[in-house]
Structure formats: C-alpha cells, structure tokens
Amino acid sequence: MNIKLIEYDKEYLGYIKKWEEQKEIYEYLTNLRPKYLRKNFKEIKEATRFYIIEYEEVIIGATWLESITNMDAKLTIYIGEKEYRKKGIGTIVVDTLVNIAFEELSLKKVYLYVRAHNSNAINCYKKLGFKIKRQFERQRFKNGSTQGSYEMVKYKK
Image 1 (spheres, rainbow, N blue to C red):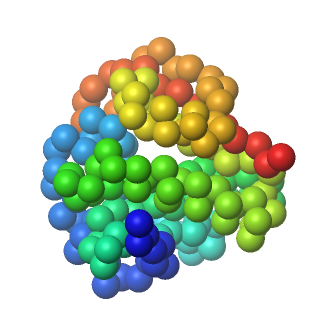
Image 2 (image 1 turned 180 degrees about the horizontal axis):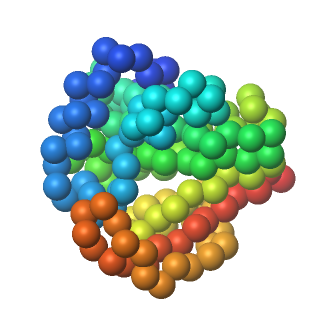
C-alpha cells in the first residue's frame, strides 16, 4: 500500500470542507478539524501535528495529534472518502502516527476517544495495542445524538 502522510497546508482545506458535508461521518466523529483550525489559536497550532492522508496519490482523509504535551497527545483519524474505508489504511496510518508520537516526539502515551458503536475502529485500535481506559455511558455529540464512548490509551513500551 502506498500511503503518505502530508503535513497540512491551507490548500487542503477544500477536502475537509467537502468531508464535513457528509452527515454520516458525524455518526463516528465529533470534529473533522483539529482545534487550531476551529479556534485559530497559535498556541493550539503549536501543540498539533496535522496530516492529510494520501493513498495511491488520492487524498482520502486526515489524521492528527493534538493537545501535545511533553508526556502525551490525543490522536484523531478519519477516512473522508467512503470507498477507501475498511481497507486497512486506517490501521497503517494510526500505527505510523503512534510511532511519530513515541519516536519523534518522545511521548509516553497516546490517547483517543471513540464512539462505543464504532466496532471497526475499536478493533483497529486494540490490534495496535490500545486499551480501554474509561467508558462514558452517555455523551452528547454535535449531531445531536447521545451515545456511549470510550477513552483508549497506548503507552510507550
């Protein structure tokens, strides 16, 4: 698989806007942009590593580490182009991003949040060594739904 993580540049904003128009994507995610693109604070941007996912020369999604401290970071990923979902691309991207967190940034922990009904993502994260740390029974999301979710973590070995 030819997968590249390209550092985000404003030229990719059109893709994100297009993906934001997909109502069904919000069944799995709450935000399709890192905080700094939503709030435009310089200090938030400096604590973020934002990448566009390219597969076989096609832009298909985005991933990022945000709220980066000297210890940990929050990971988010989504594949915006439907036809590229459930092909193992996300697993490779998450593994790559975790390696960036542990090797390049020398972090000790990566955490993420996932909706309880998103079994494909949960299985992907478990396969990569993430463990469920907390369960939230009822959480309200931007699309108006109230669902359970998990916080999952992976510690550097």
